[in-house]
Every structure is written in C-alpha cells, then in structure tokens.
Amino acid sequence: MHELEKVTAAEQLNTEDVNSCVLILDAMAVIRAHFEKRPPPTFAELGDAVFQFIIKQAKQYRAARVDWVIDQYRKSSIKNAERTRRGTDSGQRIAITDRHQKLPKSWSNFLKNSDNKSDLLEFLYNYMSTKETEPQLQIVITSANHAKRLSLGGQELMPELHCNHEEADTRMLFHAAQASQDGYDKVVICSPDTDVLVISLAAIGNGHIPPETCVGFLTGTSKGRRLLNLSKMAATLGGQLCSSLPLLHALTGCDAVSCFHNKGKKRPLSLLKSSNRYMEGFSKISRNLSPADFTLLENFVCEIYGSKEEDINLTRFELYKKGALPSLMPPNKDCLELHCMRSAYQASVWTDLGNQLDMDAAIGFGWEIVDGQLEILWRRKEEAPADILKVGVVTVYYILP
Image (tube, rainbow, N blue to C red):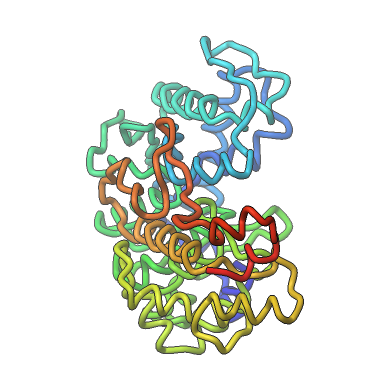
C-alpha cells in the first residue's frame, strides 16, 4: 500500500470533500480494530456498540449512507485453502444462543474460528435489523444472503446488492459501484487491506466506478489515519496500470495465493510500471491462462529474481550455481504455472464485481478437491526422476524441472 502511495504522491481528502458520501465499512475489520481488545460484556451490548460506532463514523465523515459489508466463511474456498496452509483458522467453536450471552473470555481466540465469525456476523445483522437510524442517514447491513436498508422510516431489502462473493474486499467494491449507479457522486471505502486498495484502483481503471465519482480510501490506525484521494491516484497511475494491479498483487502474494519468499512487492511494482509490455499483458490476462500468458508471467518472475533468462528452470539453475539457498529460489516451471493459474483466477474474482461465482469454479485453476475440501495443487510432476529420488540426492530437487 505504501509503495502505491509513494509512486503517486497520494493526495489526501478532507471530510468536507466527501460530504453526503456513501461510507463503506469492512465489518470484520471494524470488529478486529475496535472491539477485539476491549469488547463489551455481552453480545447484545456488542451489537449496540457496533451500531453506535456506525452512526459515529457517519457523523465524522458526513455520510448520507453507511454500508456494513461482511465476509462469508465457507468450508471449501480458495481463501480457506491458504488459511489451512498457514494454520490461521483455529479457535474453539462456541455457538451464540442468546443476545444476553456473555462474550467468551478468550474473545480473540473466538474470532479465529470461521464458524464463530459467521454466527457473529449473522447475529449482528439480525440485531441491527431491530434498530432505528437517525434522520437523513441510511444504513445498509448485509448478511450471507441479504442486504437491508435501514432508515428512520423503516427498512427494506435490497436485492440488487445480493452477492455471493466470499470476501468483503470485492463486495465493498460491488457496493461502491452500485452506489455510483444510484446517483451518489462520493464514495469512501474504509479498509486497512492492500487487497481492497488494489481492487478499488482496478475498479476505477476499468470503468466499474465512473470517473465522475469521487472515491476516497480511508485507512491506517488512529495516528496514521488518512483519507486518500483514490480518484487522483488512479488518474496518476493510468487506466492500464490500474487494471494490471490485481494480477500483480495476486502473483506476488495475497490471502489466497502464496508469495515468492523474501521478494516483496516493491521490485515487481517497479518492473510492471516501467514496462508497457508487462502492463498491457497483465491488464488483458483472463482467468483462462494461455501459453503466451504463462510465458509473459514466467519472464516477469525471472526478472523479479534478477535474471536475464526467460526460462524459470534456467533461472533456478543460475541461482543454484551461485550458491543460493533453496528457499530463495523460484519454483520450477510446473509449480510456477500452477501458481500463475491461481493468481489469474484470484485476479479475475477481484475484477468481476457482482458476478455470481460457482463455488467449484476454482477446480482446475491450481486447486483440487481432497476429501471434500478445496486444497492447493502444488505440482503435477515429480520433483525429479524416480531413480534419482531413490538415491536421495536432495540438491537435485532444486535444479531439475
């Protein structure tokens, strides 16, 4: 995120600039940032505190409407496959049975369990459905299956906002695009997540959000809180680079796709920004990766590793001869192709705002079903010929295709 801010000399907005905006909040990010360390005693009090927080934010940023957007937590998903690999989806399962039920003592641990988070978000949706908002303020709340608008005069379902995307990241941009279609000319997206910044820039760059809409991006902690002028950032970067960012971000590591060890994003962003060939190619690559697409991405990864080779296996061999540690080498060609397939799939999910997703669509794009669960397919070939593997020459694993 900071690299994008640096290269655009990001301009900040004042609250006066976003008067009567639609403020879009990432529900779970709000809960973690404001209600994880010192939560209220009961679930009902948590519901009251969250609702008051929404109203407070609306007043602070002079919003005409606030959208509370949730994640969905599915057993079989590309994001869950990466969570399983990292071991980040844990925590004891605790059901919410009553509004006056006390919050678990191990509240942080409670929030590590996906089923607990699903129950919590559904509870908050139902609890806030009983509330009345303030004059001149609309609050849109979401659940796994519905979106509902609350106002002083009552409430109504909003079927146009039904979306089965798993992540709040994309759902927030779906809400932003819908708000601009409804005539709102100012939208503020609130998130600490680089994914959301990248998706937002792409949504502006590819026209999902019209250029006449002023888009702000509210991010950072209390001391470093800043309201970025995302419309100006997108204009500085240009439409083609903005459209290229989702694939770059996925390729170099995100919640659903692993990263290249110790490579970060600074050099890849610089490489992309300085090459019309890469920008044009990245912006056009779709979910279905062609041989030419893979060749382009393979060349790019070779450059990330500082090699002039265009073949990733030759880059690996070059690094091996220089004495590079195995962990600092790129994946071989078979593994890299699967990685690129996952990256292209994730980038397409980010950019296909509002499209209803087939939950099994990821199969064949670098994931597979194992025991009913979606898991990462790391390779399709043996790491070395069988006879060599029997000998146990470990270093061969890192230099052969």
